[in-house]
Amino acid sequence: MSAPLTILGTGMAGLGLARQLRSRDLERPITLITADSGDDYSKPLLSTGFGKRMPPERLAVRSALEIAEQLNAVVRTHTWVESIDTQAGELVIGAERLAYGELVLATGAMPRAPFAIPDALVSRVFTINDLDDYRRFHAALATLGRPARVAIVGAGLVGCEFANDLRAGGHAVAVIAPEATPLARLLPEPLGRVLGECLADIGIAWHLGRNLQALAEEGGDVLLALDDGHGVEADLVLVATGLAPRSELALTAGLETSASGIHTDRYLRTSASAIYALGDAACVDGVNAMYVQPLQASARALAATLSGKPTPVSYGAWPILVKTPACPVVALPPKTTPERWRIEGEGHAMSALAEDKDGRLIGFALTGDCVRRKVELARAAPALLV
Ligand code: FAD
Image (cartoon, rainbow, N blue to C red; front, side):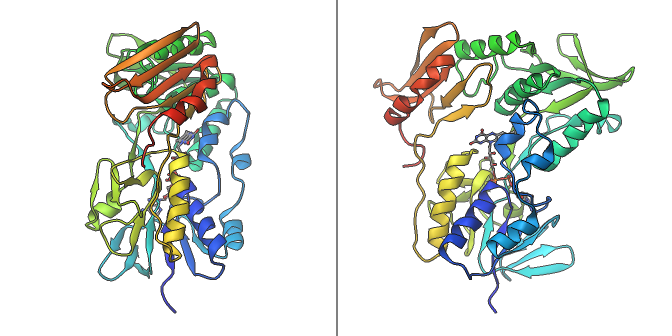
């Protein structure tokens, strides 16, 4: 029997691809491998779960066993793939060597860790990038048995969403970040200020323009020492300082990679024969888009390609919807530095249009009631990957 099509990763990219493949071919042998529990869950819901009082078991909609039955596939959980032998067409898992027919890397992204966590604090400092992380953080909050003081390091998308959500869940939240305003990579300063004000109105304490200098245990609290001499006391710390594509496996196997991920062409083909990549791990024709719509488009295109109909992927002008109910935010970040931002609006309803030197719209950011303009503006903006 020929070796199965093997998908490494059971996040939204890996599972999405498996579903697309099954809808085209009921018989083809498929093996899915994951380092985690393999539960089917929606990662975007992780940063809405505290406000909605959602325990981890309600976020897991299907177990790995149910996925295996539903997809007629082999699903291997808690299985860490150490390396890829591209010559032999095998994955190395401890002492085992597992042959693949075609291999798809859907290995996601991992949190960047900008500072070392003292041993004494490892049980109180967290990142949340998958359901298992959410389980651990949820358990730590439950152990306190009272509303917690949570310090979030980082004011990007994940930091801001968790800040809003934890506050909505009744916790006291402080956010520390070096930028002058939150969501600085998506929002020009005036709109970032609006978001900051709305989140301050619901009780979030900002420490912006500040770097974390040290992390220590003091009197039972975690003390976060800032570079202006101030300190923030917390029960728990959430580190949200960005994600990096998980591409070491590909790199050590000799595939073409960079800081933007595993390089692929529009057919999701990597530089090695019979190996493909998609999702947060992949840099598709120069674009690494770490959100759901691009990975869904990639899963559809790759399923067609792997079923004998070579199909290039394209991405539309798909804006990012930030889940901060205290201040709705939508942004389509420009791919190149804009010539100017045209900013208008009042109160919390602001729009910022990024224009090139010829006055063409190349991106936008919207807050408050202006988010209604997202469809009209997305129609006028250039696609992410034509
Ligand atoms: P992952 O879900 O990270 O899956 C990676 C898989 O690879 C896992 O199964 C892992 O175990 C496996 N793996 C990796 N290395 C190995 C190895 N060596 N051996 C075995 N297994 C391995 N996007 C949106 O569009 N809208 C949103 O509202 C939104 N909200 C978000 C909120 C949060 C808190 C976060 C963190 C992200 C959010 N995103 C959102 C982004 C979106 O969720 C991701 O783009 C998407 O889930 C990535 O899926 P993936 O399958 O590529 O990676």
